[in-house]
Length: 352
Image (cartoon, rainbow, N blue to C red; front, side, top):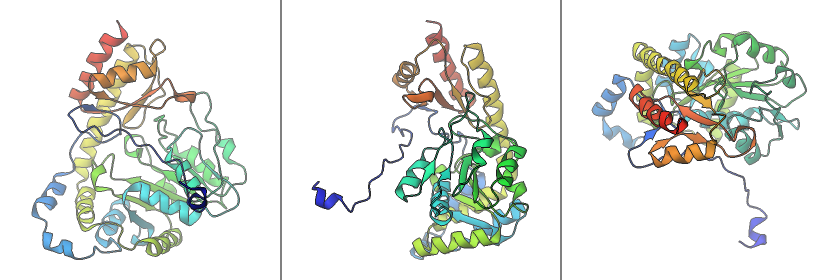
């Protein structure tokens, strides 16, 4: 393209999602839940009045907001909903990160953070994780234009306890701190416990992982009413009708069925702990996994070669080439049957 045309076009290196193969595979590469959504979601889809789809959806997503507020014991004015947590996080970047000072997030983390910062021309710095892939809290004690980090972190699966999160919050009272909790349901206590104590805290979660609804694209933020109002102001300036009717109604049913939710998490955590034992037995090393995936390497196996060998056998995991994580594979926790297929292959590959 001619330079004259390019000079006013915004360019950015995009986020690269995991592969979505269209043929039948053992799919352990995108951290999806291997179990179906709550039964009530299926019932909504079967019985939905499709004539209503000619109408715009409720721009406030009031039914879903109300269900989430009841579930977490907060006010409806403390909840914001969007099209997946990516949409919610993008809105947060636009709304809260407008300083000349750099936004801080780890060097090894969810790679969309860097994409949004560059797309919106937000200055940022990436303090390095330590040799154990843990966040160094002291790196976040300095002046900044905001902080964001996942807990558990991705792709490392490391979870930091609530006192760690609170320490960062207490050292940054004049900055907005966003805790991205896409995987917290598999890990431990949520930072939502700190919402009333810290007016600079925003907690973002998703329906894509523990609630088995990645295809519906539902995410949400919980904070104090003032920060949620600011988010809504940006949303209504950008797109009033972000959530479709189907997602709103299905989301309500997913929130209501806590028994199914807890059982799904139990099965995944149980399979995860068994998979960790199997990986250790085969000689893999990895940080303690507290998400629905394991971030592992084998000292005697090249990660790229193993990744390609798995793929040839229709077993998909995630691999980032190069850098500090170049010898690691991120393995999503599937069903017990899917994980047994993985380990049948690994037993032969590692011992060959």
